[in-house]
Length: 513
Image (cartoon, rainbow, N blue to C red; front, side, top):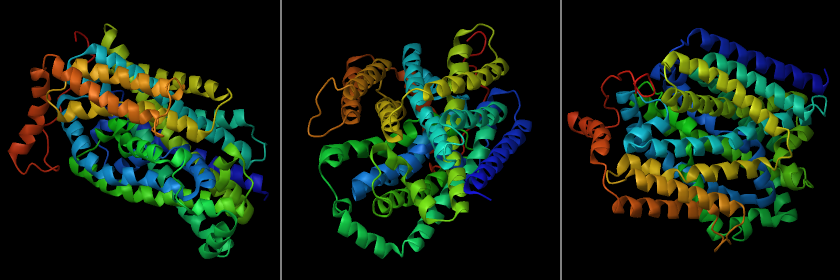
């Protein structure tokens, strides 16, 4: 069997598996909003972890990180430091507090959560627009990555437009049919596949190339600069500080991760996912970076965005055809594992925070119907955008990350600081978004290498504090949320395993509200 035929068979088998899981989830998903959007708040241990982890592991990991490592070498390693340091504390405290209140009051989206915390429709609209505006470019990385991969792996037999369309259609089906359960179940299989491929590829490539020592010697001789930490250009002190800010908290600024957190069956399940996540991150990012770095020695000559495909060029040249087929399956898995959650979250917010909030006569059941329509419409829009001339995966992802990052101040202040007000939150979001966008447009100069994310987050945080202190406090709104947390603290151990009261049905967005 030829390599192309083997690759097509592998891709077809993967598609069948995804469709089957989506269909199985659909039979266990009702037309109720809690069931479709948050899986009846019943995601457990490994499925919860895979749903959160898989959602974050986008085409950026297999097509972005290796390209950066190929050109920049070991300088990329510090990107790992932030997530490793902050994921567990954020899971224990930020994620746990959101889970408690969302479960108590029946909140389903971060927009309605913070609308009630700050008692502000204006803030809710700003958050909705920001989340939608930054999620669509992120979804784009999946369509672009899938289309480029299928075209590359099949030698053009499947053109870019057809590859992107195939990925879009498969994700559309199981997301439309199975909702949160469909995406969580498929994410579980997808996470296993892409992690297995990356770990296997590191072992097989090292063996085929004569061992890690030989690869390192070649790099030292031919590209010594890649083995030295650079403090210039994109790896300067200012850029490094900016990247640490960006990647330290970004996980919990994503609305699609927030919704998965509140879908946990128990706080213990949420805590376990927070412990396992950094371990899985190492097992995924380290192989991806290593393979990109090794490619600079083993497959030299890749220029610019060509290095995004370094892993697959490398495995295609050194390893058997079945590994190439496995590589495509792994890439499709990592692409779809993020696309599905992002699109489901957008449709969730559109149906709950817009249709449900402002359309008279809306019910939870009609919101689910609207969400299913939005899933198809959003994916069609994203696919159409992917046909335009697009930059590299890393650039698109980093641009989207910066937009999400400026939500940090209001997301964290709304949970931990009683004195935060809606005016401070809105001012922070507007200022932060403006700095992020204008910075990428080059409307103000870079100072000491500090990137737009640094200015958006730090000045946005300062704005929130100053404006909140200058505006009237919202004690009643803050007390409603803090009372839930305080009750858990005083009821027993005060530990993150304490159970909240049963969740009543949310009335937000229902008729008469």
